[in-house]
Length: 317
Image (cartoon, rainbow, N blue to C red; front, side, top):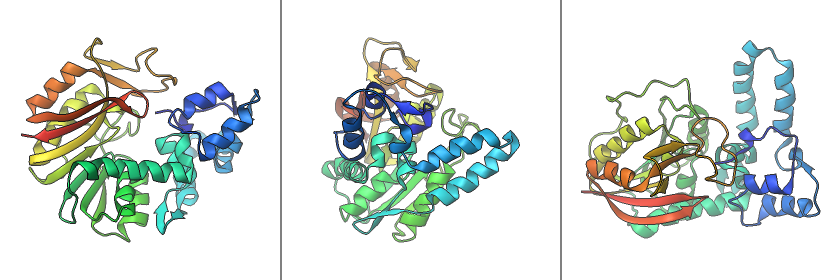
């Protein structure tokens, strides 16, 4: 997904902004910026994102390279210690949301609506109770957890992510207040998000017992994962799901394409920047991987999530 982390220009045109905010429904931040751009020309990115991002870019030019990692960690802690409260629920800072999810999510209403929609997809498919065991792999900044809480849905929830700073935020602002919602950092490699993480081998196991989960949520994870790791993670979905359990995931899939493609040209409207920005699979191949791990496709929606992501509901046989 396009994000501010991939935007290095000091200003954007209406066309460039549209690519960054392809998820927006002309609300909040997106509508305001679009109106400013409608007359042509450019606007400074500083009017779209928080000024701290601009200050960070300036500081990067003055800091010696060896000092950048510790200063970056300190900046992140200070910049994102605060939270915005919506209906009594803490949500991440606007910049953190934009960096994680894309520019439109900097808008409070857009972010909350997306969290509610994510939870509604799950709640409409299965009955969620306090005893329902949900494992959210790639939980990010806790959108699903927030959506469930906003809908007054308690559950036995475990969110996992390779980005330790997202887990730090979720523990501080979600787990402390709602102890049935737990978050755990898994320090595993991902060329895009955690390139220095521990190598994932065929013996890799998530720290979850066999058959533990009623639900596995894998939203927007296969889309930015190396194909060799996809095979391992789908195996893990099959292992940790109980019989009859459900997995919800998204993927870029097409039929008349190679088995898998990384950053395929002319596929999405936004530029693919950096490793694993878009990982696309041949639909029949992905189905065969699911089948090999006792996962049957219960429901499928073509290109209904974000831009060109398709939605799968899988059931453990």
